[in-house]
Length: 70
Image (cartoon, rainbow, N blue to C red; front, side):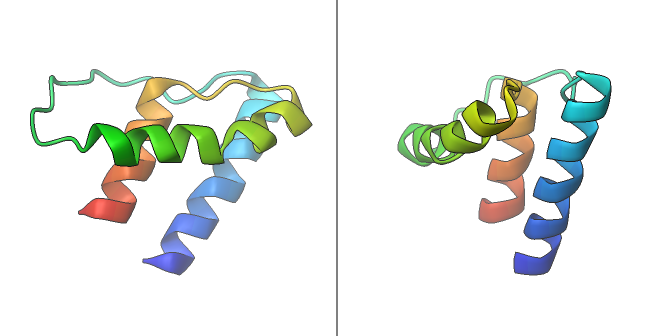
């Protein structure tokens, strides 16, 4: 899982920097989503967003959440 997560993050940043298009997908209302974990993921990526002047979509955060917690 760690390698998959790292590869996804590297490709995600590269894709957003080059195309300026974050991942777009329909998000379901997830009742089983751990809001605290989701918040930690968002705050953890803030330095990357600031360093590369990019914004990750909620779909990107959700996909990362799924990688880490599924």
